[in-house]
Image 1 (cartoon, one colour):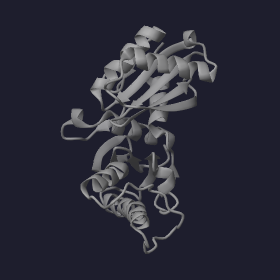
Image 2 (image 1 turned 180 degrees about the vertical axis):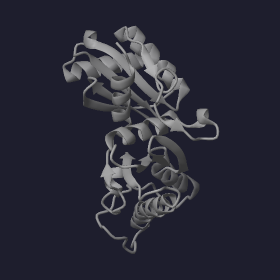
Image 3 (image 1 turned 135 degrees about the horizontal axis):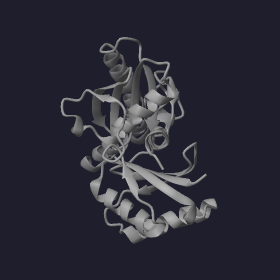
Length: 261
C-alpha cells in the first residue's frame, strides 16, 4: 500500500502526517516560515521519510489544507521536485462533502471545514457536533447532521499570552502549565498568569459551548483538538473527546473517500 503525506498548513506551524489511506503512522511539526524554500522543505521531507524507514519512491500522493498561501506553494513545489508527487488541496482540488451554511462559503478556512468533516465522519451517531481547535486562533465550529453551520473565532492561547507579555514590561512569558485541577490564587506573577490563561480558556470553552448549544437541536458532542486541547482537558469536563490530530485525520478520510487513484 502506497505512502500518503498529509499537510495541515497553519499560520504558525505545519503539521505533517505520514501513512497510508487507512491510517497515519507518524506525525511531525515544522514552523510555517515563508522564508523557507522548496528545497529546504523538500530536504526536510526526505529526512522525515528516512527517519521513519520509508522509501521516498513509495510516496504515491499528498493532500493538504492550508490557511497560509505562501507556505502552500512551497509545500507543493517541494513534493513535486523531491517526490514527483502532486499535492491536492482541500477544498480547491478535493471537495469537502458538507453543506456549507456560511453566508460567503469561500471565506471559511480550509482547516475549519476539514476539522468539521473529520468530526462528522468519526462520530456519525452524533447529530450535533462542536469542534474546538486551539491553534494560532481558537475556533469553535458547529455541525448539524451533514451541514457546517459556522462558528466562532477567538484569540489563540499562545498568541494572547505573547501579546500580553510583549505589551507589558513587567510581565514575563509563561509556561501555560498548571498542576492543579482548580484555579489557585497566584502567589507570583507567573503562577497568576498561568492560572489565569489556562482556567480562563477553560471557562471560555465551557461558556461558549453552552451558548452555541442553544443554536443546535440536541446537546452537542464536543471535540477538542490542537496543541492545548489535551492540557485543557485536565481542567474542564466539557470535552466529550480529545483528538489532537483531528485535521490530519480529516485529510486522511478525504483522501480515502474522495481521491480516485
